Amino acid sequence: MQKKVKYAIKYMNSDELRKMQLIQLELLEEVDRICTKYGISYSVEGGTLLGTVRHKGFIPWDDDVDIAMVRSEYIKFCRACEKELDNAKYFFQTHDTDPEYRWGYAKVLKNGTSFVRYGQEHMKMRRGVYVEIFPMDGIPKNFVERKIFNLIRIWCRKIMWSEVGKVSCKSAVMRLWFSLLNRIPVDKAFGMLNFLAGRYSERKADYVTCLSFPDCWVKGYRGFKREYYLNTKRMVFEGKEINVPEKEKELLLTLFGPNYMTLPPVEERITHIPASDFKF
Image (cartoon, rainbow, N blue to C red; front, side, top):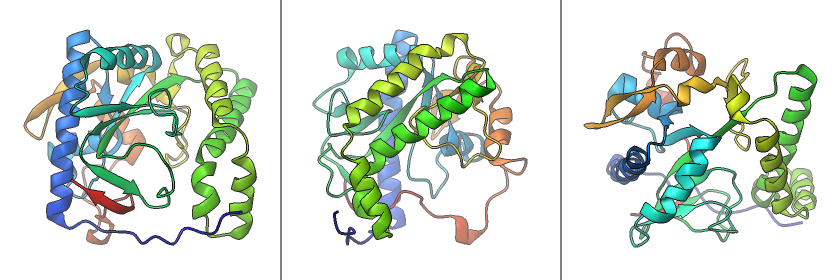
C-alpha cells in the first residue's frame, strides 16, 4: 500500500486564472473550428454553458471548459483531430494516444503548458492546460438493465480512478482498497465501457450520459436528453461564437435549478480543480 500523497495545493491569483482561461478559449476555438469544418455536432455544457448564458463568457472564477457530443459525433471528432490538429501546438489526449491517461473522455492540451492536478502528481500521463470533450452514450430504458448498467459504470470508474485513490485517499483502509483495485488492468474497464457504449447505442436512446464521469452531483439525475447535443444554436462566448443547446434554459434548469442566473455568495466563488503545480 502506498503512503498518502503529501503535495500542497497551489492556488492561482486572478491574473494567472485569466491567463489559463484565455488558453482554454484558444483550445475551444480550435475544437469549434474542427467541428464546423467536418459538420460535427457538439455543445458546451456545465459551467461553460452557464458562463455563456449568464456572463457571455467564462464564469469569472471557473477554471475549466466542458464540451460534450454524442458518441457517434465523438468518433468523427477523434478521427478529424488526427488530420486537423496541429501537433506542434496541441495534443489530443485519449487512452489510445496516451496509454497512461486513465479517463474515458478526451482532452485537447496546449503544448508547452503544464497543469498538475492535486493527487495525480505520480501519474505519467501528458500534462497541459486543457479542455475536456465528453462522449455521451445511451442509457437503457429498462429499469433492471439501467441498474446493472449503472453498477458496471461505477466499478469501471473506480478501476480507472484507483491509480489516484491509492495515494490520495485520507483513509489508510481506502488507500489499501484502491491499491487492490489498481491490480485490475485499466484496459478491462475501458473494454467494458466500450461494450456498454455499443450495446446501448445513443442512436436509439432518448437520454444519454458520459459513462466514465460521475454524475451523482445532479439531484435526481437520470441522464440528459440526446437532443441537447444535436439540436444546437450559436451564442457568444468571450466575443466568439460557440455551440449551445437550442433548449439551453431547460438544460441549465436541470443542472443548476431555477436560480441559475443568480450569482452565488462571494465565499462560493472559487475554482474547483485543485492543482499542485501549473505553468503557462
